[in-house]
Image 1: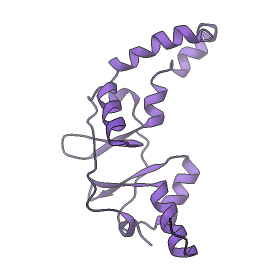
Image 2: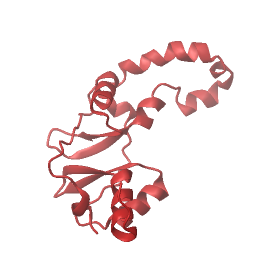
Image 3: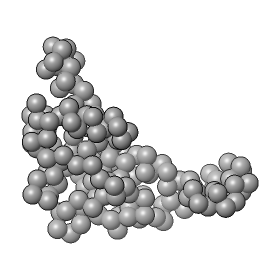
Image 4: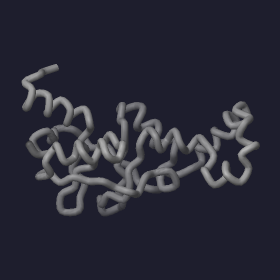
Length: 153
């Protein structure tokens, strides 16, 4: 079973640009109920991915800042006040650039194995350098249960 077997051609793939604000990306993800948002350049090439985890991580200090002054980060009320600065950040500042991608011909069990090994939930599907879709852990899970174990939801 290949990615093309579970990729829905009718689904709109929402994307954003690296210069998109944290707030605009968060609003799009909330409105469309997206667990991740591919980040593309002006030619439509995938340059990153923004996950819920990336959005959430932007609310906290950088690890190096915490290491330099760990005592400053025990005041969680102050951290809540400082979290609002995330709104000023861009997607480029918080997105993941270490990308795992699949092609339409990639076996779904390979994609599933990559997801399990790396802890990611969504994988961009790329063909000829262009983003054509996203495949999620849930879609792979349902396809595997249906095909190999004859279980339906």
